[in-house]
Image (cartoon, rainbow, N blue to C red; front, side, top):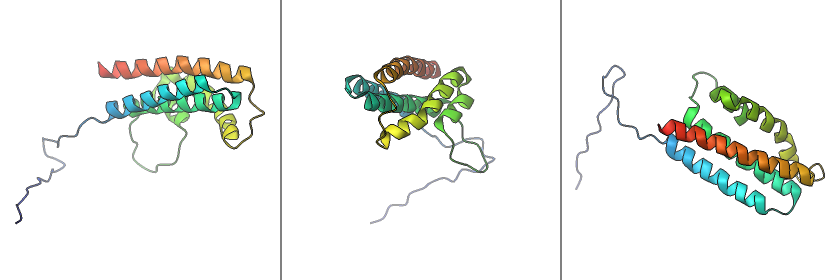
Length: 147
């Protein structure tokens, strides 16, 4: 037995838009939670190179959480763009952080490729502390968006 189902078609000039749940805040919160778990993993990592890479990835997820709230799709040709470039545009108050993490992306990629000699204990510890600060700032952006 079939039951007729009516799906209204929304016209462009229609005054009512269809209901769309706001997924941005949910996605942003999930990404921030992943970033926080990554930071915890980095804290427990005994190898400096791995600690560096995991902390950098935590920052990447935190940046993605901000983009989930702030970034807007742009019409036209979409080219792959660095998260750090997008972050600087979407959240100007985090521009310096974006530049900082963009400068470390190559080193993280090298560590992930197995080239670990480039990261010292101090490098890893410094990045870990900086990522802790960055996650606090990302969390503030998310809380401001909830207001």
